[in-house]
Amino acid sequence: MIRHRVKEALGRSNNNDDIFKAWNIHKPIMPANKEMDERKVEETDAEISKQISNLYITFDATRLVNKIGSLEKEIARLTKLLQKKAQLEMGKNIVLSDLRSYKYYLDKPIYIYMEKVRTIYITSYYDVNLYAEGDCEEDAIENLCKQIIDYFEILKQESDKLGPVPAKHFMYLKQIVKER
Image (cartoon, rainbow, N blue to C red):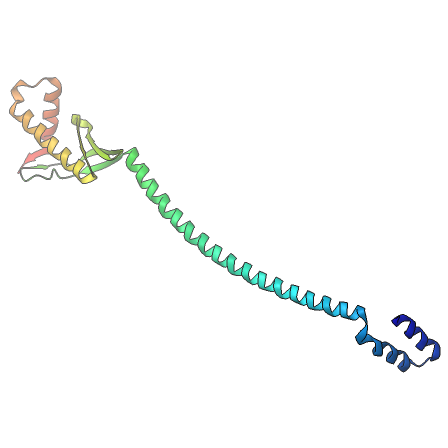
């Protein structure tokens, strides 16, 4: 219908103003224009929705990045704890320089071995085949020190009746365990 009116205007006159008037008169009531306006509104709404979605996505991404950062820190902390636990379960060498006694002391430091088995700490002094245990590291070390002192005192009292291995242990302990 609009095309028909524009063609009529073209047929009646070669004046561009008449053509323009014919086109503009009908432009506001053109269904195609309404559809275009509605499409523009829809496109604008869609664009606004898209920008809002992008803001939410950006906000969520920022929150996720922050959360990932805090999780990475927590993973690093837990990894260190697990490594320490694994080292304890595998065992470790400890230098012992004191017997924790008022009566005896060590002239030289000795090396003991500690490991954790389930919930118990076990300390070993392989040079004289002594072992002790405790609920924590300190208890296990303290108990081993008592074992060393008790063994040394027994060997000292029975020194004339010792077999070859205990005699060897006594000779060794006499070099490092001293009375105050």
